Length: 99
Image (cartoon, rainbow, N blue to C red; front, side, top):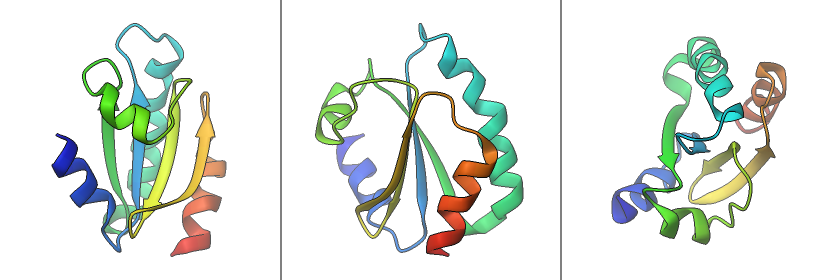
């Protein structure tokens, strides 16, 4: 997934990455929030989920030390990030700033 991940986040279209683990209870709160963001922004954002247990290399390169972590990429650069359960409004504001 490493090469595929880097190819995806280099896109001009914003990519919202949800770093999570199956054992992480707060991580389970993010899918409905991200679904709402997806509905709000339709084709303007891509949402990608990365399990840190399955892809520790990606988590390490992105300097993910706590989960859940939401990272917004555009053109391969981090535009915004949030640690812990994020609110739809906070993610929406970050997306609106780069769209």
